[in-house]
Amino acid sequence: MLETVRWITAEGKVLAGFEEGLALLPGKLRIIDQTKLPKELVYLELDDIDEIVAAIQRLSVRGAPAIGCAAALGLAAAAQHVDADFEAKVEILADQLAASRPTAVNLFWALERCLSHLRRCDKNHLQELLREALAILEEDIQMCQSIGKHGAPLIEEGMGILTHCNAGALATGDFGTALSPMYVAHEAGRKFTVYSDETRPLNQGSRLTAWELHQSGVDVVTICDNMAAQVMKEGKIDLVIVGSDRIAANGDAANKIGTYGVAVLAKHHGIPFYVAAPTSTLDASLAHGGLIPIEIRDAAEVGAAEGVRVYNPAFDVTPSELIAGIITENGLHKPPYNFG
Ligand code: MRU
Image (tube, rainbow, N blue to C red; front, side, top):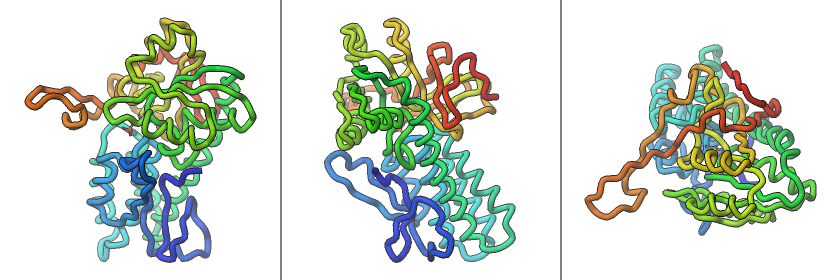
């Protein structure tokens, strides 16, 4: 499987969880540079706070759970350079990381979890910070595995499944959220075809989803974003599964721009539309999706003519009434949703 976000020790040992008795420090955050995929598989090893923030902002590491894991390990990596006043300085580092991207709640959830763990500790601060960060990564991998088990029964032999953006191993510690049920069904020997929306403007679908499914031997077809309606009309799609960056208490789910449109199309064609996400993506503090902050990204990503104004929201919110079920590590939740 892909090692999207890991800890790498000075001896070059790559870790996906805390290992008692092993020299974990010094070490660095290691990520796959997803801006280079699918052409090149390049790893970045980082311990400088500005470089880590920049890597999250330019989407070298992306996808809600992966951002959370990278922020936690990145915090531990950068904290190695703190000499005095550890707790206060680490809080400043966490603030810098928190300012990197606004929509995926996993980022804030992971940082808050690291900081509250630190507040409870009276010694070995750096070691404890790393322990918690590695626990977040390890749990994320387990949650994604469970999502796969709970979601796989939705996938039947011969189905066509549409997904949008990348909610696979590249977007998480491993296995993915929306793609995890597909990996489990594939392992079980079921044959199906995944239609991967290219996902403009940064093409996470065609560059990342299609690449990782193809690597794993899953039958995948890339389509342009504006083809989904026609492909559904042709009867090729039986099921839609997407990931999410933040789910409000009522089940409204933010995900990559274009997801809402796919949900509307699925409703029109009578195709069930599912969201898969770990509970770290739930934001019980928000009553509905209208309260989810939506990231507006640089106009240059869209590639308009010089001087033309561009509006580039990176996410949209699918209202819960369009969602047939939300798959978390705890099982398949059916409407009405109440995550408050
Ligand atoms: O801008 P990105 O690439 O970080 O957006 C990612 C998505 O929208 C994913 O679908 C979402 O984070 C779920 S990842 C398991």
